[in-house]
Length: 269
Image (cartoon, rainbow, N blue to C red):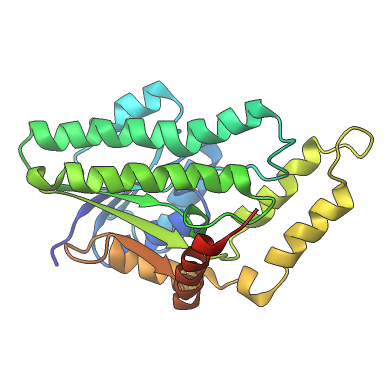
C-alpha cells in the first residue's frame, strides 16, 4: 500500500486525533482539520513532540465555516476521512427542534457538502479518490435517549450507501466506520447535553430518569471501551485500497447489531 494524502475532519480530539497521529506515524501525509484555533496550537505542538512535523499538518477546518471549507478545497488529497460530528441526546419527543436541526447540520448536511465538493474535484481531475465517513454503531440501531444523534448517523449511512453505488464508475471508493462505545469523552459529553434544557418542572422526562438511562449504557465496561482498539482499526481501514464497505468495531458490537436487525422484523406495537 502506497503512502496517501489524507484529510481528516474533527481531528482535534478523540478518534480523529488518534487516527491522524497513527496515519502520520506510518508515513502518510496527513492534514488534521480541527474545529477551533486552540486545537491547532495543541496538535501542532504534539506533532512536533512526536517528530511528525513533516507528515502531520494541522489546519483549522470548521466544516460549518464556508471560508474554512473553501480553503480546504485547495489542498491536494487522495482520501477524505469525514470524522467531525456532534451529539444531541435526550427524549426524542421533547428535545428542542433547533437542537435537532443543529445536529443534522453538523453530522449530515456539512459532511455531505464537503464530500460532494471533494468528489467533484476527484472527477474533474480524472483521478481516483476515497471518502470514508465516521458513522457509529448508532447508525444501525436506535437506543432510547439517543434517537436524534443516531438518526443523523442513520442518514449518513444512507448517503454513504448511495454514494458507494453511484461512484463506482468513477473509481471513487466510499466506506463507513462504525465505532462502538469507546471512551473518548464524546459519548459522555453527549449524555450531558440534555441537562442544559431538561427541566423537571416542565418536561415529562425527569432528569434522574434520563441520567439512569445514560448510565445503563455508558456505565458498563461495554460502554467504556479502550479507544486504542478503534484507532488502530481506523489507521488500517482508511488508507486501504480494499476492504468492507461498512466497518463495525469491535466484533461483539457487529454481532449485536446483526442480531438486533434480525429481531427488528419481529417487533410489535
